[in-house]
Image (cartoon, rainbow, N blue to C red; front, side):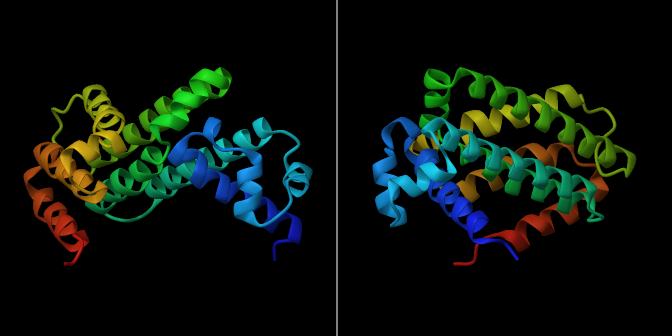
Length: 210
């Protein structure tokens, strides 16, 4: 069972994450967070002596969550179509929660963390997506003539370029619809013939009900 201090830290990080990712941390004051959490600013500073400490805690919690999702997905015994769907949807959503303003604030005010994020994103996606693709080829679920390097770059570009709040606003589609469309267009083309029915079933079963 978690102690009171651990619970308090998680509350602070959780609330700060919501605000930082949606608005950027430069626009969110510690006074505002204290009001939203209904605790004193002094209490927040007891756990996080500076705002930068809180920013780092939020950053570390998010990257740890993404890492866990990738690890669990790649290591699971699910079939390839299910792994592919989970990796793209679950991990992709986690990545896109890092809003554009938050990333801009990282670059402007905490360049070391901005560089760390870029390294993490590149290495985490590359390493785990490569593993998944290699497993898919070995299982006969993916075509063997695929250029894995190009495919990984398509994946990264789709996440960073298409699945953003700004882009989604212009397209008037939900994040789920955007992910599913990209999945359908890209991965249906790289799957081996025998794997397509299972993958299409996965997409159909996961579709939001009206």
